Length: 345
Ligand SMILES: [Zn+2]
Image (tube, rainbow, N blue to C red; front, top):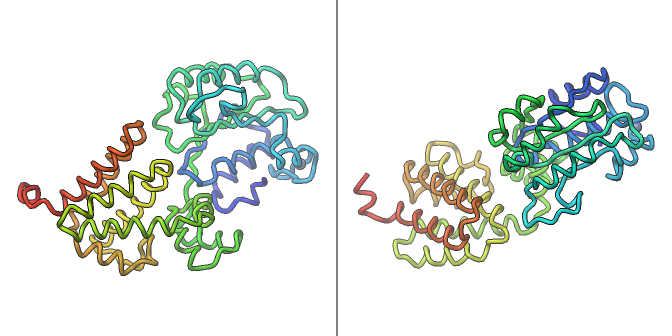
């Protein structure tokens, strides 16, 4: 992976190129940005520039032995830290304190073939305090050859002591138009689909590519949109029960379900507040979106999103999924149809 292969992220690429070229490389970086924005790709490009045998202008050559190993993911001096890397078995992929301790022991072994040793730490913001404190010991006294690259969606969960020892770089998503251009030019995705997935991904090329490869995504999106339409259209409780029943079967793909619901509800809110349906993320379903918005008020459209956010937090905290989605649908239904509730506000 080379910087020149990455679409967008110009400021970040330039800064990392300059650091690699001048040799003035910090011991620890934090790449912050939404899922799929290119944090891992940028980290890999930087790592390969640092271990390349013939780098030029801060860019890896792509052909030397080091670069070939980087490309194959087998360079011994580039470590992507996961629990499984050190044989630590956990039910979740949240980095365990034992993993950080194992990494700490290993980091003091000198690089095998390159001058530097790079540790890429994905999802650094999911580390519990104990793991972060363990990492802090490394950040306080890193070996001279070591470069740590922490990746996170939001730095809010990181301890101030950790933050004070890293160079933070914010990775900004592309505009929807630039994302679509990238999908067409680099991935050969047809224009209509590229525009659709670019809008749905919020400017994250990685996420847009994932969506385009997910054959069931649009089918699921349409099913959810139809259940929403029934929920806001039918006063009886059958639509509510049917929607709950459908959602109860989606626990394994809960992240995707909440993501799709968010794009639909956000579109509803924007259209209810005057935005053209043609500019919506789900612009290929203008008629359905218009129908949905005809059944609710602008205030309800905002409440729907607040309710979604509330129950999404519950699922993040491992609250019973079936109960969570059932309550969420009930609240949506109440907001739309419960006359007592509407009279109270
Ligand atoms: Zn090279």
